[in-house]
Image (cartoon, rainbow, N blue to C red):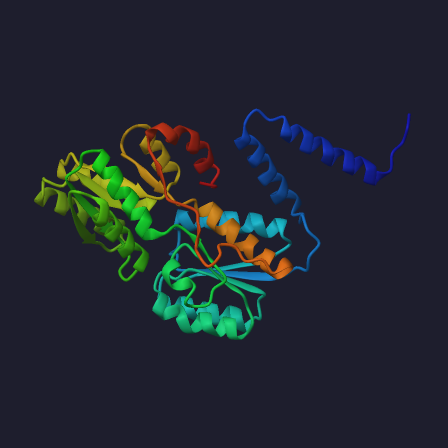
Length: 334
């Protein structure tokens, strides 16, 4: 029997695994297999230096949206041989301090959200003065270029809101409640303003305490009880959609519940008709592309977008697409 050196056996096994993955019946399975393989092996696809990139967001604890962003960023970091650091704080001043801390660590690149841009401006400027390239992600597309960032990865929040207004028109809605769960978040204001711009009916903003779901449920329920003319409720984050569904039941309202962002619960409720539609901005792609673009800039001096944001959304998702996307939400990539 012929004997092969160990390296040849390993190479053959790798080739077979790639071949088998290519024969998978669905693209989703191929992508999942590749994700698991990369996570298990921890092997980079490049031999560039092990640079350190820091992502600092305005996320709160336990926010599933940001879990998906991180998942994409970590996958790209494995591929690009990047040491990936993640930190977050809902308080803008604390978030700015985290950016300062990353600068002090002399990281090789910074990814930051600008939900409250004025509070982050000085910290971003300090990073750039230190020669650290910055990419903004998710929020702050309007300020990104002015702040000196390489590019912005995310959706245009006004355009996303406009898409919602148009969808509400197609559904024949007359009065919408736009639920803002984070005071001072410019992206949230832009979303609701976008809805009002294209919606032919009336839009009313409702500000709620997003850190307390019972408070959110109570506030939405009270509004629906007081105003029976509201026939659509738009929440600005997936976790708040189910809370709005409960508030609707409490109020005995017939309003349709719609939401920004996807998760497994939203996908299931789209399928069974509990929700009308969702706006997907592809958070996995935001994290993945932000890391990948920083790597490309460090390696090859590349800049993507031509001075414009790199858009990852919006995509209107209805019952018709929910079944297809449910597979991806369960694995945490949509």
